[in-house]
Length: 266
Image (cartoon, rainbow, N blue to C red; front, side, top):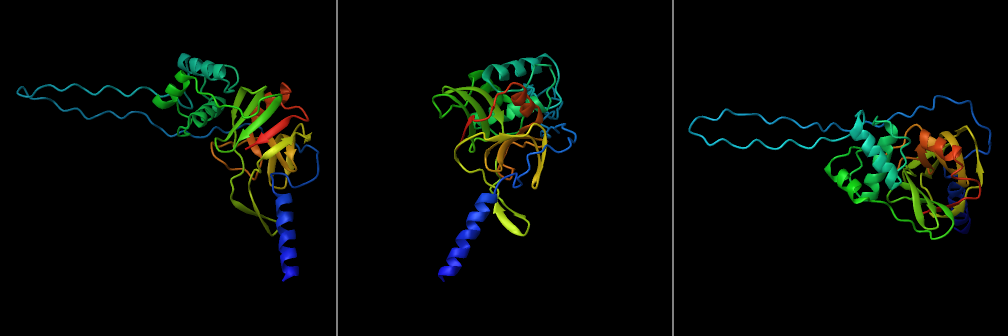
C-alpha cells in the first residue's frame, strides 16, 4: 500500500511539473511562419425591419418603432470607429493606432473592455458596451508598488501595472482547465496562481511540443506570456497567457516586460 501511494504521488508531481505550453528545454527560435492573426468572427446583429401594415381609414395610425441603434463590429470603418479606438486607448485598452478600421486589434480591445465591465464577450459595441465606454470602466490592480504584470484569470485580462495604477489592458486567454494528453500521459491545462518573475525569453517563434509560441516571456517553468494566432475571449490555452501577435510585438518593441519583471497570477 505504501509503495502504491508513493508511486501515485510521484506521478502527480511529474504531471504538475510538465504542465504548461512549453514542456521542452530548447530556447532557439523556430523558423517564422505567417504571424497574421485571424480576427474572431462576431455574431451578426443587424436590425431586422418590422413588417408594415396599411392602416384603413377607420383605424388610428400607429407610431412606427424607433430603429435600433447602430452597432460597431468587425469590418466597420469610418469616424465612429476612430472615436471608438481613441476612447479605448484613453481608457488603457491597447488597440494600436487609431486608423478607422475595426479589425482584430480593435476587437481584442473591445473584448477586454467587456470583460472588465462584466458584459457578454462578443466583441461588438452595442448599447451596453457603449455605456461601459461612456462610464470609463477600467479594471483595478492588486499590486501597490513597482512594475507588475497582473493576470486576472477570472476576467481573462492581462494588465500592465505601475505603482498600483493600471496603465494598459489586454485581452488574454489562459489555461482552459481541460485535460489533455501528451506522450501517453494526461495533464490539466491550468495556469497556476502565484507570484513569479520573467526568467527567460525567446525573440521569435518557439516550436514547443504543444504548439507555436510567438516571442514568449517565460515566468513559471514552461508557462509564458506569448503571442498566438488565436486569442479567444475565454480560457483556451494549455497554461500560458496568450496575447495577439500585434500586442506581443508592441510589448517587445517597447520593452514593456523585461527580464525579472514581476508577474502576479490570480
